[in-house]
Image (cartoon, rainbow, N blue to C red; front, top):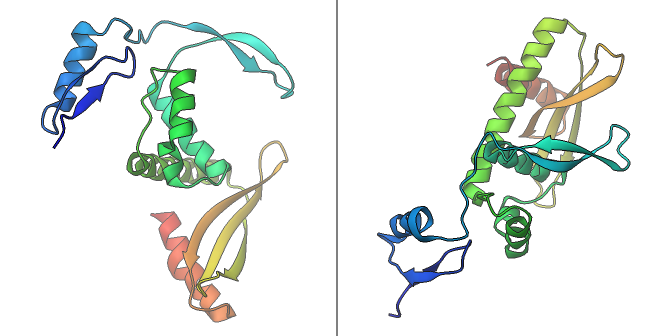
Length: 199
């Protein structure tokens, strides 16, 4: 077996490591010897470009690095762009993020799954609070289809009009279903969607 070595992503220095001490050695290196690592000052703000309200062009503003906010936006990106969980482990994406912000500690695919689930829980709580507070009327619609693997799926979507008279829609449930018959759809909504959403 060859000598295993770890490399610092900030300065490029490498040193011998093994599975039992590589994290400890890396932490020591960053804290004491690394010449390029600069710890983040949470109060420090930087000048950045921000998008304008119209979405065209940009304006100057101030911002500060926030690891948790970056992770949340990354989770939102996977949802909005319909990307697989393993996208966060792609070499090209990780290299791009390091060049963009070396301070960003990118999560693994398992960690991003936990982040996505927490995002789902947070949004579910916010939606329930909105419905309780606003007392809006909600219309439920369903859509069913069969996948290439011959598995039946159903999605339940809530439609409502907000305070600004804008039509909104939110997916409440995405689940497998036995078949596309009306009785099956009704039982799935009654036993699955409404119970899960009320919890």
